[in-house]
Amino acid sequence: MKSLLLKAGAVGITISFVAISLSFPTQAAEKKNFVFSKKDTKLISSMNLNPPQDKNNEIVQWVRQVIISDHTEPHLINAEITVYGTTDRLTYGGVINGLGYDVVKTKEGDIFYYRWQYIGLITVPHETNWEIEYERKIQFIGGTGKYGNVKGAGICKGKNTPAGHVEKCEGEWQY
Image (spheres, rainbow, N blue to C red):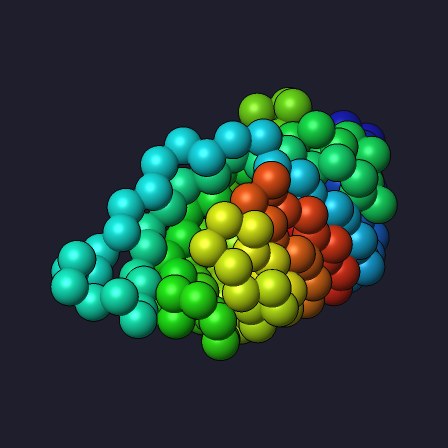
C-alpha cells in the first residue's frame, strides 16, 4: 500500500510540474525597431531589356553585391547582401521605378529575404554623371535558422550615382 501511495505521489508531482510549466506562455518573437545602412561593393551583372531603337526608355535587370555597413544589431554589420532588381526609367530624366529581392547572408550563415519596391527621381540628368534619389519600401518574407520566421517592414532612403549608392533603412521586424 505504501508503495502505491509513493507511486501516486510521484505521478501527482510530475503532473503538477507539467501543468505549471505549460501555464507559462511561450515567449513570442519580440518586435524590434531596426536601422541599418548599406554600401555597394560591386555590380555582378546588368542587362538592358529594351530594343536599341528605343532611346527614351530603359528597362534593366541587374544583380549587385552590397554589405551592411551599420545596423542596430551589431552581429549584422558586414553581412553580405545580394540584390536582384529590375528598374524602368526615362533614359535622361524623370521618374525611375524598381522592384526586386535582397538576400542577406549573416556571418553565422543564416539567411533572410526581403522584397522591395521603390520610386526615385533622377535629380541630375546627365549621361555619365547622373544622380538618383529614391525611397524604397521593404518587406521581410522569410529566412533560415534564427530568421526562419522573420516578419516586418521598413522604409529606405538612398542615392545612386555612377560611383555607387548609399542607403539608410529603418522599420520594425521580428524573428
